[in-house]
Length: 279
Image (cartoon, rainbow, N blue to C red):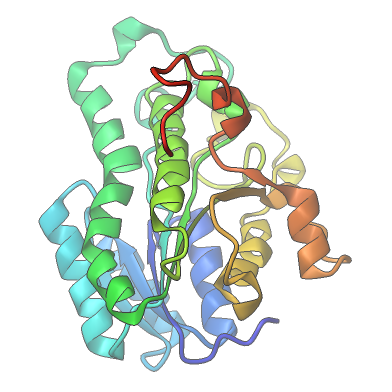
């Protein structure tokens, strides 16, 4: 286990399936964990399990910028610093219909209100949290931002919006922000499971064999690597957790499971006055 003793991380969506696995692993690695979730009772239970010396529960609705500022302030105030942020919070397609995996959602089922709920949480929520955390990262000239997006298949899949659309936006913003912050000491990366994961976002109505689904804990190794000093220069990358091989060295595993965030190869030949933009 990577030793990250003394480092402070805030995890959004911490009371959910992936969030709980992350918080437990981060605490085990010696980190101080801000357990942030709109489900305050779930956050409190998990923080109590981890112990008062390892975790603080903070209620936070990532769709609300003021709530994000309060969450960051609470974690940084408790531990005196903030070193890392994991934007894991998100709404799943099950809020529209539980059988969405086998019967694609259609546009008539997606109300304007639901569309905005997804965008506000799954895309804007990460922006709000980063805005709140950035003063701490800039002051320290160091910070690790990890955004949880999804596979390109899910982004483009029929009937999988607004979820896929919002995650595609988050992926694109990751690449853009990483370029902006390159050289600042603040890194921005993506970690994705790589397929359907054994969390409530994949409801029983999906019909999948739960044993065949990706385990939430598979998200842990690439994130611990990204938090470590060995990844100080790693930014603008996406890592597929299901492809991370724990039998390899971290650098080899990162090479095998990684690729540039946002698929920049598709943007190498723009039609642009003067040939191409400066950046």
